[in-house]
Amino acid sequence: MLKTCKVCGAEKNISDFYTGRRECKDCKNAAARKRYIDDPQTTQRNLIRMRERAKERRYGITQEQFDQMIINQNNKCKICSIEFKGTKFTHIDHCHDSNIVRGLLCNNCNLALGQFNDNTDILDNAIKYLQKA
Image (cartoon, rainbow, N blue to C red):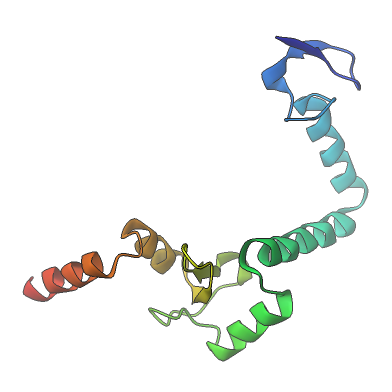
């Protein structure tokens, strides 16, 4: 199925368009690169605002609450106590059933919990396994 880009006028495959967009991916990305080159500070501020809104939408916490959690945890992972290298590497851990935020984790601890599907029985078995080794 073909679609015509409203910017470049080229007829392209529908997969060359983002969902619901009238300009092709190439034109959309070129416009974003131009905006960044023209005004990188505004682009950076917009990215920060997008991340803040995502925290509220996904986890129901504000940036202020997130910052307070970092302070309360002494800028360290709740599980392994490794110091965070920046908020980009700080993961918000939450219960997938209730969506209640449990704390902030480093990437490794967050991935480990995800691999164990937050299942305490499996985690207990892993601890027993490690203790026997």
